[in-house]
Image 1 (tube, rainbow, N blue to C red):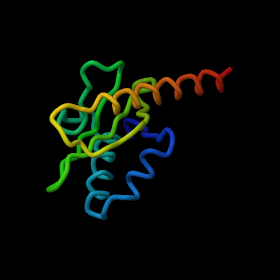
Image 2: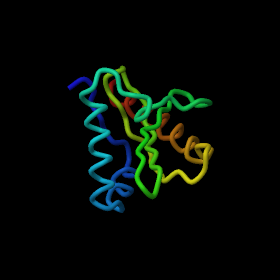
Image 3: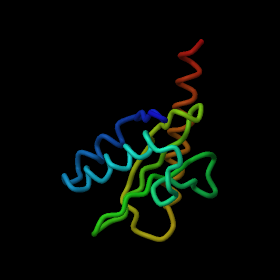
Length: 115
């Protein structure tokens, strides 16, 4: 395994549970790529402009565009923050803000618990 993926909060778990089996398989496939592929194609993992270190996992289905916001911790650990169905060309600011807030919470928690 090249990267480890962990989940912060229950945003992803709730979202994943609401998806049908075909969408879940696609999500699992992209997570597999992220874990085991040295260079993940930008088609699946892309840095979000105008963000402080957030990336989006991109999953396209026939009917919807799914985005899962993540960030790195020590380059080999990807932390999954929040996810949503994208309904416009631009990533909604409220989703980016939530991702940034979850990232800050994660690092505060990590620092507090490593002392």
